Every structure is written in C-alpha cells, then in structure tokens.
Length: 185
Image (cartoon, rainbow, N blue to C red; front, top):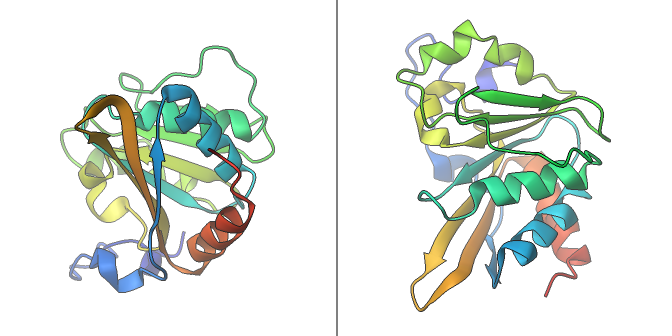
C-alpha cells in the first residue's frame, strides 16, 4: 500500500486527523438483534470492492465480531465457525468473492508487531481488511477507510447503534451504493 495513505508514513510525519478524509455524513442504523446486525453486514458486503479497509470500533460485546462475521459471510465464506482472531491476530479467508483478512488488535502490545507479521502485504489492493480495535494499529491504519462504530443502546440491552463513516473516495462510493440498496429493517 502506498505509505502516503497510512496514518503515518513512518518518517515522523504527524498522524492523520480522522476528520480530514471524512467524505460524507455518517450513515446511522439501530440494530435490534444480533441477527439484524449480521444481515446489515451481509448487505454491506454486497457493495465492497477490493482494496477497502474497514475499521470496527466499539466496546467489548457491542457486536464487532458479529458485524465482521456478517461481512465475511456476505463475501461468500460458508465456514460455520467464523470467529474473531483474538488469540491468532488475523484470520484469512481467500476463497470468497474477494480475499478478506480479519484482524483483532486487542491483544497487541505495540503497533510494530503488525510489521513483524507482514501487515503491509495484507493491505494489498486485492484484499478487503477488517480491523477490530483499530486504535491499537497506530500508523498502520490507512487514512482512507470505512469506519464503523457500534454502541450499546442503554434502554435496550440487545440493540446497537451502528454508525458508518467514509474516509476517502472508495469508502464514500461504498456507502453511497449501500444507502441506495439498503433493505435491512
């Protein structure tokens, strides 16, 4: 990936400002169940192109892994046991409509660990990359991405607020297509 698209280019530049590449008003959705969250993710997967990085942010238990599973299944992966790579750091699924790599950065102690596993290769333009706990990725996180934030709905324990924000032109196009095709409840 072109280093200019990462948050830092590893030459000492200032980390990118998330708002700098924001290209449209965020899309917001309230999911009423885990099944609805997965259905929303499957519908989003229909719009994904190769080369997109998707950041999944939210507290423990908000449904980041459920959303990731829906995207992975929406790309044609039929594996019954799609799980978060909490202990393996990355799970790869090359056999779907697009190759997809699912990262869970919760347990890394320093962003340099991503360089040791070859993160640059995963960020190839042929792949879709999902990243849970992106704040731990520091300058490995591309400035151009789709950011999805999940939050609890205090009055309803099974409900989640889901906010999708495009950062860059590819993510912008994805959200435009998704919003015009979204048929989730």
